Image (cartoon, rainbow, N blue to C red; front, side, top):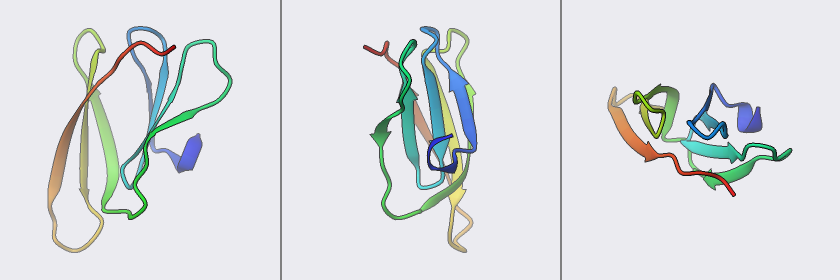
Amino acid sequence: SPDSATEIFTDQWNNLWSISSGLSIFRKAHGDSSWKRIIYADAKRQCYPKVALNKDRSIAYIYSQSCDDSNTVSVHALELIPGS
């Protein structure tokens, strides 16, 4: 998995998505052989991401916690669009 991703999932169009600490987000469009970096975090501020998808797999909710000692949690909504 790219960038040691801890979460990999598919959307409703059968694209693969991966999430790694940072947060870094990658997508591999259905039928492609390589990953495309969608979001890159150069400083690892959000760790241990977990993903929950809505019913039709068009939105991914990403839960992560702060990598430092502040004990904060973040929730991000990622709208999944068809790959080309």
